[in-house]
Image (tube, rainbow, N blue to C red):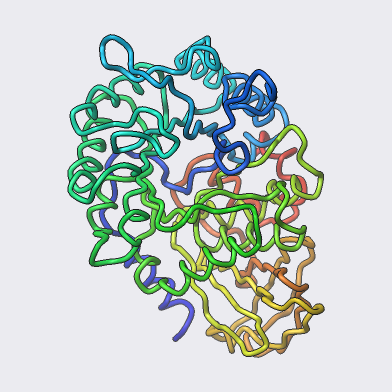
Length: 441
């Protein structure tokens, strides 16, 4: 296997039919309430952390004021437990009046005024997973129109309290209903997670035609074990899952838990690196009001984000699982570049891993490698050059690898944000202070 032919093959296999709403050509980024705040509705005793309009306004303020929006984190996503226990007199969903006294439309305007987008949660079933009113088949059109009238920009549709037949009908019907509203609304389907995540129970060709992204597997928990479990499932099944991802249609391994309680700094870097390699949505679930400087630096790492947001949109793969418990992951990127991640599953001490680019299927030539988390550049690297990386236990070394060139490559068609991310990688010093420089790109 050689590098350049593999890039071409993966680009072709990822260019499958996608939902024709023009949205999410790169993986969505933002913040979601579920993993960190769950279904906390005790606003009397815990007003700062309960599921309420105040929580989502707070997180919107942090995204808008603390450099997150400029890095691409532009969605604020409400998860379960936002609604009243009863629909209104016209059969429409309504927010809990005590916790969302201003209503969802007013909250959406608050976000839009700050250049952000609002996501909301629904469930294709009689009830949501938290026991609130669900969207049965006869309510799909009503709920789609309600979300659009509120100014919602994204819908996550869960699958609790529904059966296989209802899901088979309901997920495509909701896609059609959202498109019929005339409002661009990104659509996340939890359908495959309820059908085991793999063919023949899951039809990924159909999913790509109706959904922008989909949850394939179990909910993430605040632990390194959970991150490893999700990583293993996705890469153990990469031959099936990897070709299904691409612009407008993404596999979703669930939220980033960086900045909570369960991950060390090294493990946090590992999740960020692996999610970037997977072309996964970068949806944080943490408390942005109290985030540590270490967590912020990882989540706002310009090079890691640029790799994740690469406009070619090819999901990466696991190349090697060594007996030493070192694993190597690779993702092809635009402009003949690529990303490498060296992950240690060890628990004892830093491990010195010896290899070369040739051993990782790179073709002959001269390369440079930018270390995403140290900011250092390794120059004068031929494919045959032996090198050593020192990887901390449960940590990573992540490289952006590119052929040594004398001039800037011609740009591909891309958005302003994608242009920044590409330039950030081609001129990697931009990544050191990307949040300060974005407005000048």
